[in-house]
Image (tube, helix red, strand yellow):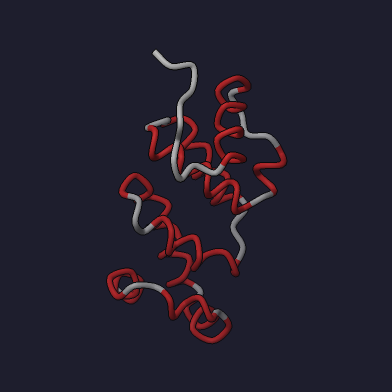
Length: 121
């Protein structure tokens, strides 16, 4: 009935990127290069149930992964049930490079107990 829709807690840049994806069917370079925007877009895709966008975001996040981004990304995706495969991939990456993460990454200490246990296991 209204010509306006108010979306709370939705970053405008991420929403615009989602609309662009609806029209183009692909993620543009600006989104891919910006890890934080890509992560916000993943959260929006999960929130609104946009499966193909969700899959593309997960794929891009894993392709652009660096040693320094593993722990912060794991902290975020751990709370998203639909990101189970990404979570398992990140946990495996940490367990394979465990020495690096416990000595060089300060983000490692911020992981929750369950996630830490899964990595050790």
